[in-house]
Length: 68
Image 1 (cartoon, rainbow, N blue to C red):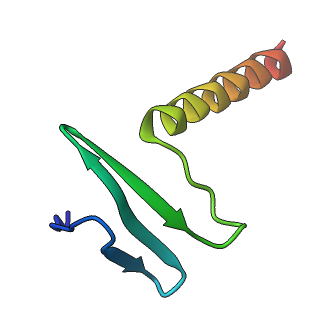
Image 2: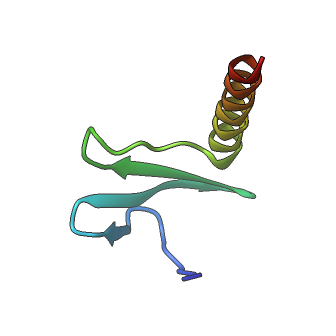
């Protein structure tokens, strides 16, 4: 894992086409701005985990229906 220190207004570039900027820092919260191609999916981790869990449940349900 790469750990960086950035100040407000400073950027991090990923693969030439994804840009992260520190928008604001307040107490224990950091606000990020993200510029990425429209076909790039971006989620907070808790949302990503919920999507994966739902997809896994749908796959299990499809397999159970198929095996009946």
